[in-house]
Image (cartoon, rainbow, N blue to C red; front, side, top):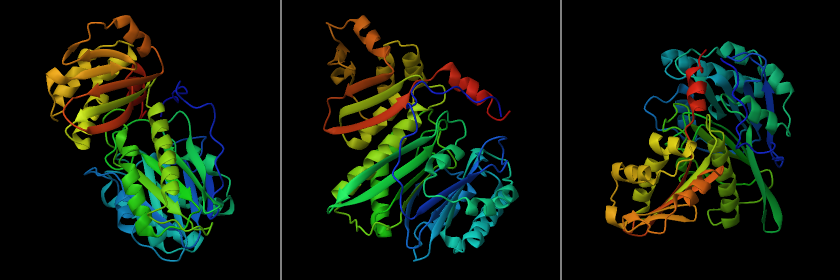
Length: 409
């Protein structure tokens, strides 16, 4: 692989201080799956009784690891569990070899940690179409087991990176009935980001006690307004996986009516989703696109994603050009209902157009000033109904081309 891209200008100052989650231990190792001189395998060991929920890519060419996780996610018993992740190789479009590699890795992890194989979840991320050298991973399992630690989540975030320029983490602590419940998560993702489920690879942990069906319902619902509302380049990965593990170690019972916990989990998921956009390959701008006045929330999201995925919109943003005509174009092509003569468009606080025509008081220099900021807002009101949606994206720069033209070399 070519040289690593420079740190995103939208990166946070540092990896956050995350709460330690009782019932979870992490370990990382350099296995040489693809990269040299860096960790590329992460293992998370989960306490007995852990509930697992997940959402996965709906790509028709999803990887063997995704198919395996989908088959296992509803299985819950009192045993422990584990998550094993490698970077550098997606183990996708690898036929029978891919299935055999997943089975070999998950069985080896199960044997190493004395777990049922049905409770071992694997993920792979990286180049598509190359056989996974799973023997290199299995050869490091003993080392991984001996180095498991409850405070190594930052190392885990580093090990799962591919073209990411910074490790991504988020956490919070919530008070429930006078006692504290902790949530912490990590993610990887930078390109091939147009989720149709969750996105990329995301692993979230909590010490709350939650029944699996309740946890699954929460994760599926929150996913729709977090990971399923971001896009970098309009391409959906074969490997997108979001797993949420509730160890129950706090003893605090969370139900479907636990609004505080839901809000805490929402904040963590949304923060991680935003970090993925901020690390979009070659990105220099973080863009929030809101659409109101649609005939439904679904139609609003269709319009918002059409704007967010438009190469013409994204390159104009990269060039700091307030070319609102490209917004009009994207709305028109989305396929969702729109009325040209009711459109209203704003860049930040600048009213660009309303009633289907440019605002008589619009001054392009005002909009241009907004476009020079690192964090931008584009708002469209369709004037048709009460539907609304918010999505997040980044600009499209020459850096994206450089990274992806060099990815396999």
